[in-house]
Image 1 (cartoon, rainbow, N blue to C red):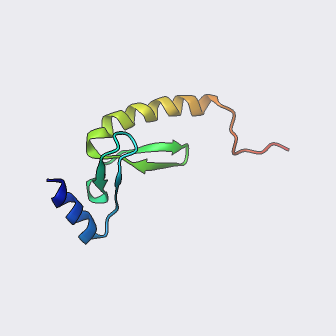
Image 2: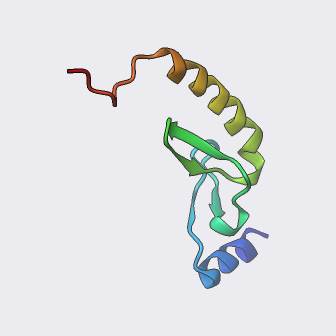
Length: 76
């Protein structure tokens, strides 16, 4: 079954990379509606099976990012 997804990703021009959570390869055509936030302004795609875990981690990260000092803001 993964061979079909690999072929679809390659022929369709999508990426084929490991999921940052589980490490299994997945294609860009499988990417769901959720990404794993790596900073407050960017994120990376996760495989369909890891969407619930990505949502949980994102909620944890947003709680932490809201309370930490804003390193990207410079005060003069």
